[in-house]
Length: 187
Image 1: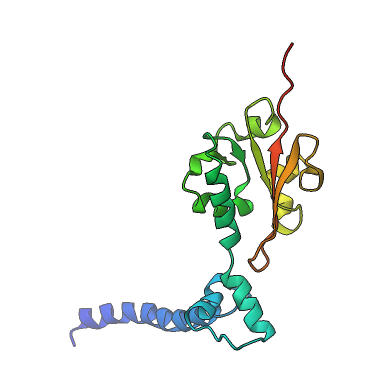
Image 2: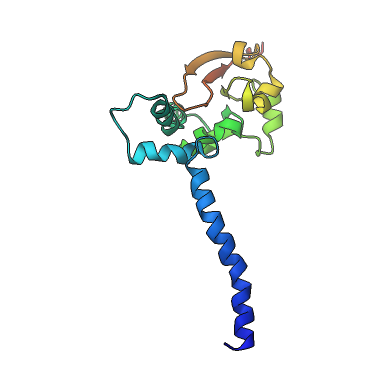
C-alpha cells in the first residue's frame, strides 16, 4: 500500500478500537438497574414474564411504570382547563408532568423569567396550584421546597391540599397538589 494510505488507515484504528470497546460497555451499562433504570426496565416491557414473582421482576415493573403517575397528574390538570401560568412546579421532578401535558403553558417553571416573583407571592400573582414533591432526595433541591420548607407537609399557610397521588414508579416521589388560598376580598 502507498505510504499516505497506510497513514490514514492508522488514524482510523484508534477510533475503531474505541468504538469496539465502548459499545459493549455501554450495552452492559444500559442493562443495569443502577446505571440506567428506565432502559433496564425495557426488558420487562418487551419480554415480560407474567408468572414471575421475584423481587427483581417487581422492581422491573415499578421502573416500567415510571412516569405513568405523572401522565395521570397531567391529565387531571388538563381536565381543569386552567389558564396559562396557573400551576407552579420545579422541573427537578416536574419535568415528566409538563412533558405529558397537552397544555405545557399551564405551568410556571424555574426557566420562566417571572418564576421567582410568582413563587414568592403566588396568592397575589394568580397562581392557582402548587405541585409539590417531598423534601427528600432530589426533592431537597426543589425550588418550592426551598422557598416553603413546610409546603409538602402543611401547605405552608399559603395553600390547602387538594390531591395526593402515590407514585407507581420505582424510586419516584409521591405528589401533592395544593390549591393556593384565594386572596381576601378588598373592602
